Length: 141
Image 1 (cartoon, one colour):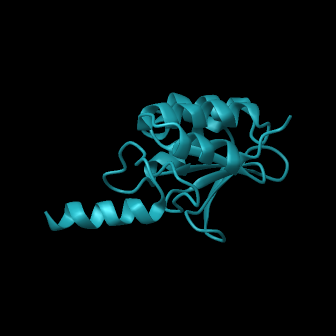
Image 2 (cartoon, one colour; image 1 turned 90 degrees about the vertical axis):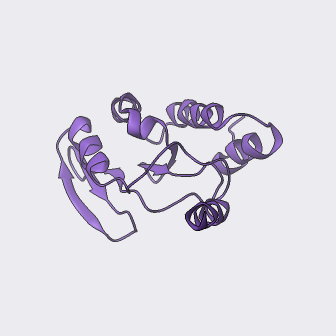
Image 3 (cartoon, one colour; image 1 turned 120 degrees about the horizontal axis):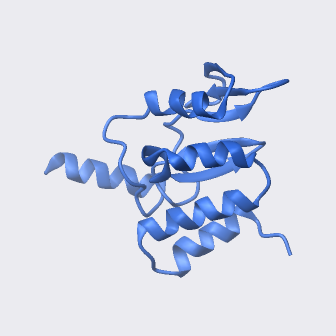
């Protein structure tokens, strides 16, 4: 039985109180099995500690990274898509924004890492709205 991405991960984050690290690791395990992104790219991204601490999600063959674990996820980090022919295209962080082509998974990952937001730490357990509220409250302190 195939699991829906949203229902599978969303269920994990809401119904099973776990640490942020556990939720992120579950996300990485899931994207390895969903078949939407080649394993070579996933391995390269997971090997990068700054990306491994973010919540991964896939769509349309693209590998995305979120600063939070709850769905809708954040759109403030570039993402990697397969390029026409060989290689990859680094896009974003928003749809329609283009960073550039990358011939290898290592180069694509490096291009994302170079563009990470400042203070991009471990994924926040919650939704983008909850993350924004948390960031506002800590900025006021």
